[in-house]
Length: 125
Image (cartoon, rainbow, N blue to C red; front, top):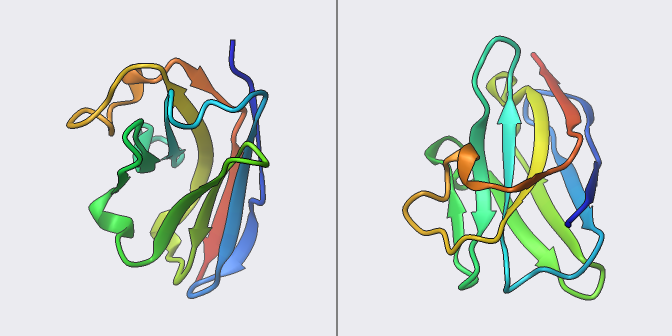
């Protein structure tokens, strides 16, 4: 069983930055694919970024060049640095982990086995 807790959400204006962190109950990096998803009101959950088992980062087109995903093995923490935030980035951000070897399907929510409780990000104009 893997548990995680997200933090770092908040309210910012357009163009601002936030840093989200997800602390895992155990070190799973290199054995699980880990990712950030988000869900806006009335919308489906969508993938934002991931670090796959082979270490390769993946990004949704909508966040490329603005968001950076990274991991701190010693702290068992997955980080999402979000810069140049837009109103469209508003939503609840979730940390997720999958024990499957994901590649082309990294963006599919049903491929992930464990989820955090989410942290709210609100971007205002």
